[in-house]
Length: 417
Image (tube, rainbow, N blue to C red; front, side, top):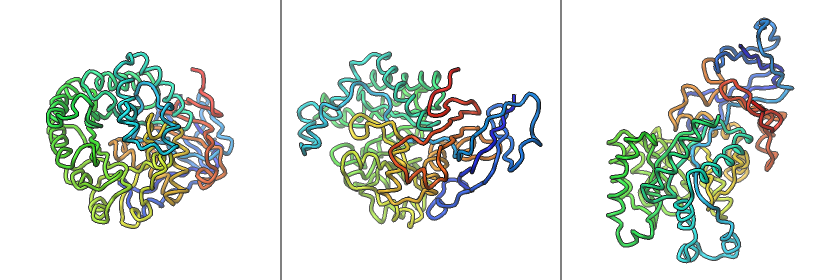
């Protein structure tokens, strides 16, 4: 059965082909009084005005009630699957206890690694599904999910198998990334090279079992050097993995150049990005993936988004959802922080949360824009206009969510199957 979504106030969607860079990020289509015709999960027509010319007796009508419409949101950097939580460290953090001191006492990432290793598959699945359900309510229809809280093959595989099962059972599409090089586990404290060799060896298992399409490395002071990062990424690329890299969060140590040289899909964080690296990124098709919620929660500086846009870079915005530095499933809040703190325009934010992250996940041919032939991944917002979506912060503006034409959420509530 065909579906017509009518009585839409305005559609907002990117007008450009990805990767959308620099000033082009603000170029969007604004279609007033539109309607959509959907068949077999695809948009087959975008009309304006009276929809009755496309009406058929067996068609399903959906009244958008004068809400605005944007593409389904795409969150391209998360750590969805983990055990436990870290609220026990929160009072220490806000009291100013240094992270390294928390880490030395068994807290920080090692806390989560320990909890994830001991958690069963079902415990990880149930906890992640609860978060995934929340993300759907905020309009996320596609999601990248990293491992990285196992730091041993058994637990990394367990995390990725949980993500794979969620992808099979949940309407949000999940794209998986192996992040074995997230940190140095305590049992390898004085055996860096041995651990890196192990991560490279484990790539073969991840590849053979088809558990991930991407490999990520945390290239940062105190974690993995640029040379170590290059070594891991070259091995991953040889096996056919696509690349994503944590880099320049605290210090610039060469991770961005390695990423661009190897054709990484994204470089993520980038608060300490240099002018030279901005030029390199602007000349490449690597997406600069910014994580403003992390800066907000950790009270750190924000990535220089305005300078990046002026330099001609292609930006995405992601939540970085994780238990340590961004424990919030509210992706809309992430976008609102990008407006307020990164000084990005609402139109730029729309590009950075739809078509550019779609490009970074190689799914831009079928999602990320509202146009004929694309999947009907759609978000109706209870807002008078796009600016209001970013201006009125901290609440859920979702009215309805469609995934491949199927209504999943209406009036901020999951629709019963």
